Length: 324
Length: 280
Image (tube, rainbow over the protein chains, first blue to last red):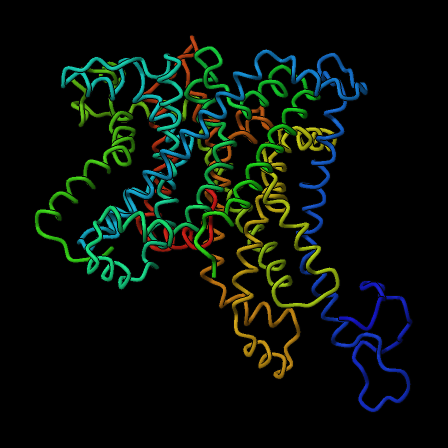
C-alpha cells in the first residue's frame, strides 16, 4: 500500500482502453489497476457506508450541537440568534441544574453499586457445581429481552400505592409507602427497576470471567488455610478486575442515558427529585423548545460521559490486574 | 469456585437462588395475569396471583383504542430493516478494517470508533433539526437511518472487525489462489464463517431498535406511525390515568414473543451478548 500516492477512485486518471483485465503478453507500461490498487479500492468501498454514516450522523451532529449551543433558538418564536457563550453562562444561573446533576449522580452511583454488586453475587452463586444453574441463568437474564417500556410499565403498576408490592406487603402486615410519590422512594424505585432489567448482562460477563479463574489457585489457597471470603477478595476480585472495569464503564455510561424509565415511572418527579440530565435535556429541547439550551445541556452530558470514561480508563493502570 | 458442595450448602444455595429469582420473574407473571383480570380485580386485596375470573376483554380494547396492529408492524419492520442494514454495513466495514490493507486505515477506524463515545442522547437535538430540515419528521427514516449508519452501528462494526481479525489467513489465500476476487472471498468464505458474530450483532441490534423510546417520541407524532414502546404509554383514560389492564395486555403482547424466542434460543442470546454485545 505504500508505493503510490495516487488517490483511489480516480478511475479516469489514465485512460487504459480495453485494459480491464491485463492482457497476457502485452508489452509496455505495467497496468494501472494492479491487484493491490484494486484491493485498496475495495477496502474503501467496503467502509464507505460506515464512513459516510459516521460523518453525517455522528460528526456533523456533534459539530451542530456545539454551533446550536452558541445560539438562542426558540422554535415557537422563530428566533435563532448568535449569543456567544450566554447559554453556558445560563448553566450557572439555572436553579434547576444543581438538583438535576444531583439526581443524575445519585441515580448513577446507586445504579452502578447495586447493579455490579448484584451481578457479581448472582454470578458467584451460578458458578457453583449445582444442577439447574442454566435455568436460573435464563431466569435472571430474561428481563434483558423484555421490552424496556413494557418492563417499566409493569413495575409502575406493581409500585402503585395500592399495587402488587404493597398488596403483598399488606398480607404480611407491613404498610408499604407510596413508592413513586415519595422523593427518596421514587429514586430508589427507578434504580431498582433498571437494575433488575439489565443486571443479567453484567452477570453473564462476570460468569464468563469467573469461569476463567484457574481452580488450582483456590486449591492452593485452601491448602494455605485461607477462608472463602479471603479467597474471594484476594483471588477472585483481582483476577476478574478487567471485567469489573469493563462492566463499570458500560454501566456508568448506560446510567447516564436513562430516559424511558423516568418518563414512564415518575416524569422526573416528585418535584424534580428524579429529573436526571437526559430527561431535563428532553424537557428543555422538546417540551419547552429551547433548542439552544438543550444543545448546551447535550454538551454537558457529552463532557460527563467522556470525562468518566477517560477517568475509568486511567484507573485501569492503578488497580486492574495486569492485562495480557 | 466450582468445588463440591455439601447437601446443606446446596439447599441454602437453591433457597437463595429461588428468592433472588422473584423480582426477575414475578413482574412478567404479574403483567400477564393482571392483563387477564377485569378492571375491578386489578387492585383487589389480597392480590390475586391467578385471576379468579380471567377474560380477554383488555386485549380487545388494545386494538380498539390504538391502531395497535399497525404499530406492531411498524416496530417489527423497523427492527428487521435496521438489523439487516446494520449487518450489511458492519460486516463490510468490519471485514475491510480487519483484512484489507488500505491507506489511512487506522485513522479511519479511530474516526468510526469515536462514535462509541457519543451517546445518542447527545446528538438528538441536532439530529432532530437535520431531519426537520430534510422534511423527514413524523416518518420512520430517522429510526432506520441513524441506527444503521450512525453511532449504534459502530459497536457492530467493532465486533465484526474483532471476529474477522481472528480468522486464519490461509482460508483467504486459498480462495485467492482459486481466483476468487475480494468480494467473492468476503461473501463466500469469510461471511459464512462469521455466523456467531453475525448472530450476536443481529440479536442486540434487533433488541436495541425494538426498545427505542426517546427517538420515537421525539420524531413521531401520528399514532399510525408510532412504534410499540411509544404506543404502550398511550392507553390512558380521560383523566390521563393509565388503563392498567389494557396497558398490561399491550405490554404482554410486546414482551412475550421476544421472551419465547429467547427461551428457545437462550444459549445464542446469553453467549452472543456476553461475548460481543455489550449494550443493555
